[in-house]
Picture 1 (cartoon, rainbow, N blue to C red):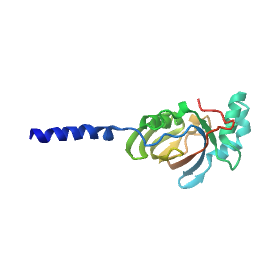
Picture 2 (picture 1 turned 120 degrees about the vertical axis):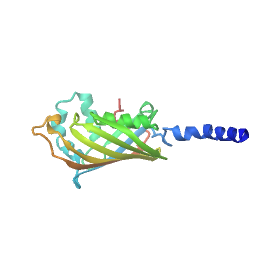
Picture 3 (picture 1 turned 135 degrees about the horizontal axis):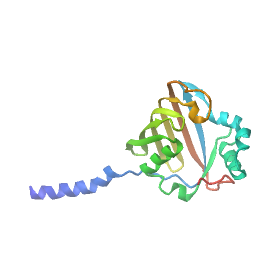
Length: 198
């Protein structure tokens, strides 16, 4: 029995990192990225970027010049995918589960995300939002990074948008089904004048 136990212990020690590993197999490249966003509310397509582009002039008048340039570059022109510049510092830990959970939470104030498991290049998440950023409800989603040149996320769930949290009159949108898919792809190493993320 003693001779059987040692190989079993050695096998379990060697296998342990595979179970405890919280790293995705790829890290996004530093450089210029662009994203396409598909959103629907109760199954009806909605384009939040076009709404923002339509209000661009009103938004720009309240921002200092450096933020105006960043917003214009991020929104892009009509029909153009929004772009962002990622530095080496931005992507240093972008292959860890913790990094992506923090990214989801930083994009959606008042939401807490946890890992629901990882399978290869795919991370499953679940989130609960308290309405601080406007959305109150439950979200489930996936992040898939098949290589260092693409990151695809899908979040969906049921909840309500609290309009007063967004500075708009009205109580809430009522309970609705939301789905947002963001497909990001690496364009080139040179950021071509697009400001880097902070």
